[in-house]
Image: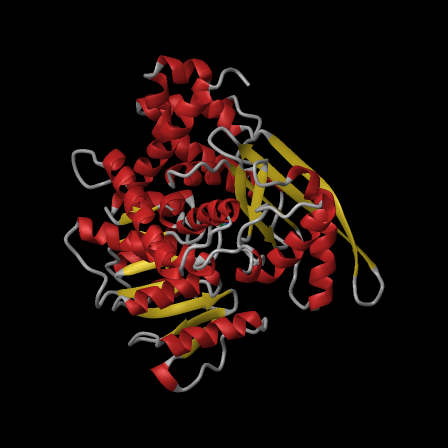
Length: 447
Ligand code: GLU
């Protein structure tokens, strides 16, 4: 065992979470611990402050019952949470996810990752995550509204522009943010930027919807430029069909790449010669209607492969944009056999630890989500400043800011990850995020 692994083992043994009790949280913390503990140990102020130990335990975990009425008049009960990770560098900030897989472990890992991601943006944003174990499939518009109102009835006292600013995540988009924001302002009696991802007619920012997917492509372009390469003509396989996946697909296509797949849990839509923007928009429409991707239009020679994932399509670049742990070690080996050059995470922690290890051994460039998908929360940060100033920027200006923020993140992360050989982006992201948090936490006393 090398020194950083030994330090990490001792550190992890002390945590209240274990691999069995909180597998995702444990995975996220151990990955960071391996990279940052030697740096922490070498800085007397940071090690005395026990920075990583504090970040590994969220400031607060709010857990509440959400009681609502469905269209039949039946009472329904779900569980909601908000995990407030750290507000050392800014108000708590991070998305809300409505999905049956949501539990405290998933939200703790996401809140932990969010602290580092938000630190990397260079903006004053703390880290948090929340959501509910709701399966929104098949719910009517009215049911979604009543659920959002019941959810916010519980969370409202903890939310505010300088307190905690939720946004969207899986199954929480513009529609849900509208209902959540309406419920918050009615209860609080204030018109403030308490959520991001709002509609343009009530304080939202241009480009917020596109930001995560576009930012992912900007980050990939920065990493390719570092190697003297270009995205033009590259074969890009994307998993997922949500906001991040489809906007990454649109931007990659616009930049001259060939996007050969999008997918969902039922299978993969494959277009060997690349998807047209029309086909990508068809996917967006299907997703909005809650439908799968079977029977695509005849154009683009696209076919739907039921039950399959996109990793055997021999892409140059893979963009996992669906959800955590979607890409395991055997899928990573399939990508390597197909000569993949780069894997960039649009989702949060989509690779299992084993998959990440397999890629590292094969020297595949791995761009972690906390850096590569930070464009969404970065534009949320811009939305917060626009709302406070009551001055809204044009789509061109926000897009230019997003490009420059992604380039800055790339510069910070590659600087930290530059060893003797190739750039280790995973280590670079962990260290760059950690340093900013460590300076702030150690400066503010024992809290
Ligand atoms: N849910 C997004 C993320 O994973 C965005 C969060 C936000 O805008 O606050 O970063």
